[in-house]
Amino acid sequence: MKYRFPFVPLVACFLAMAYCVSAQAHFVWVALSASDRTASLFFGEGPEPSEADLLDRVAQAKVFARDSEGKYLPLKLEKKVSGSQGSWIAAEDGNAWKGLEAVCDYGVLTKRERPFWLKYYAKYLDRSALKNQVLCQSEKLPLDIIPIPQGDGIALQVTMEGKPVEGAEVVITDDAYEQQKLTTDANGKVLLKDPKPDTYCVRAKWVEEKPGEHDGKQYESIRHYSTVALNLSTDQT
Image: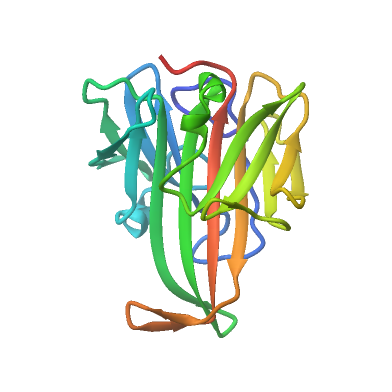
């Protein structure tokens, strides 16, 4: 089975994760549609509609479109459900959206008797954004994945609060289910070699081993997950 955007051709994003929070392989993803001028937020295996009954778990997400100068435009999304599948969407408001970002505080959870604070971040960029590093680098996402053209490839730099993260787990999946599991170097980078005109689903994980309290709940660590839907098959216009 192949996962696809309903509005972007040739997209397959089968992802696996090593643990289960409420459902296996669920992350926050965002995407822009050039055809119907909409922004979408998804909670699932990739940037496409998934289980509608899980959408309310990420209703608190804050979503921002970005214009060509990098200005942030906060969006108000509405739930869209078709059968058992759904997403959160917003129609373009007259501004030309060039990128999309989201931040979602999922709250404190417990797995194997160890409580942790779970935070999700998401970003969508297309091929044209690689020419505009203002769009590639986020001011909203604490754990960011920054694509940087490098020779015949694309370096993906993982940063935490603006600083490169060494040893972060990165997973890259292309349209053909080819999956790379990499670890960032001392500069926080991994390399996507010889990228094809596909949409690459990229996620990064970073865990802060520090205890604290959030919303009245104690936690032992903070788990950060960041995703990027990197659409190299088209330019957003």
